[in-house]
Image (tube, rainbow, N blue to C red; front, side, top):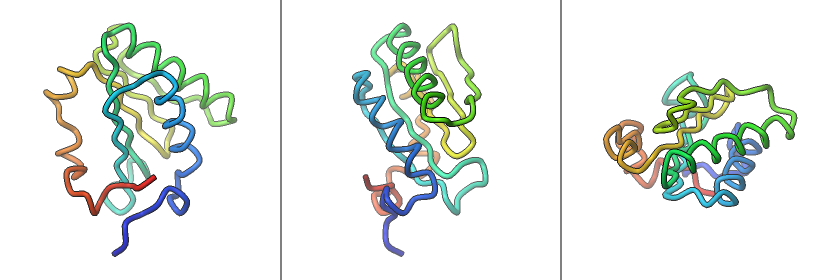
Length: 123
């Protein structure tokens, strides 16, 4: 089975938008995991880190604002105001923004198989 590409992924437009916002907001260690065929929760998961709580919160705010401006339904957001780990659920995409030590503790990449390069969504 060939790896998925951003162009043929069901959530491609949302993933592209989220990645642009994450890059613009200087998020670190951005990972995209293709969930198609693994779960019915979403089509893609994006995991990124902010440097401190305030950075995590600013990244999450920017993501929500960009998604709304793009005409996406208002996403569900969990983890504010603590901002150790903010989860943004658009329905098609689940975005996790962590502080680095919290991300390391939960290690979602390993749980969802992102450590296997052939299963990554290539952008």
